[in-house]
Length: 385
Image 1 (cartoon, rainbow, N blue to C red):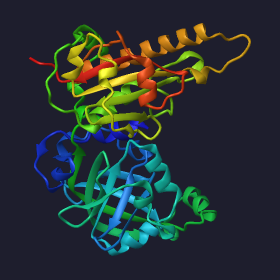
Image 2: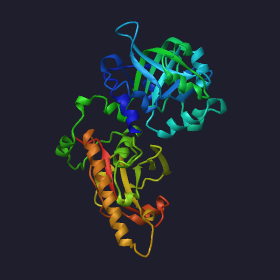
Image 3: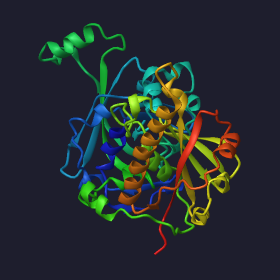
Image 4: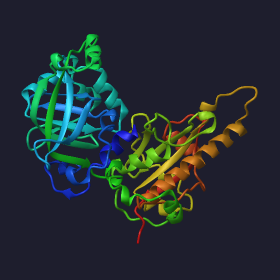
């Protein structure tokens, strides 16, 4: 659901300092830079939260609207919540609410499937609650947050339904009739280093032709670290899951054999494409096992290792190891090109490498099967001027 993140990316442009900067967010002006289609925005399933520091709840929503009311320069978001929903109780008592965007589809699905009455959803998902200066809850892991002050809230009145659409809707809707909450936007923040931030201004996006023209191998890097969000964006472009639940890179017979590992001085992490997160595999720095003659790998803050899981191709009388390995090499090349072009598009340097890669030592360090074959790697980082 990458569109989830890109939708909010088009909302904002001008930067200011805010209370949320300590959690990696930057403040944006919504009124001057809204570029997303308000008719489709809520189809991207944002998360709605309300409550206070004592207790709060959040849920996935699919209905809402954006515009202005009671003043030309009063940006407004309207949300609709059924009266039997747990979040409705918090909205009735709250002065503010937040709308959040997540690129992690598991958060979106879980928040929509389960009720906060049955347990702490944030705790179950490993999310960390934080609060705006107004005391409105949001999650530190969100890609973007909009805070609204509620100006009006009331349930729909059935006697004012003008046709059969709402009548038919509520005839068999167990959660009850919806309440409408209109909120003035009083704050908006986007995660520093996230894809949302980098994609926020369409005019500044590079075309594929531009990126191909600028692509060049980088063998000299600054020591400046990359954030986890930057690494996740690189990995998503290389072989992530897009808004159509498809991989960003094709593969032989759609077996998706290429796994990605981020290797740094303080350990190695495997990329969970479905959850869009990094899972630590070992505390070991395995980069010396892949350097060979490429000493510049030590300069880069991170290296992405490409491993082909040959087991995904299966084995039969008509399938041989040589063909499967060729499939893996082909798939690795596709992922490598995705990674390279994305790095170029955001001003990062990289180069594909493979010489003297000690596959056996890497397999042992990462506890890989013999058929999980390390094929190549990409150091990534900021190029030296």
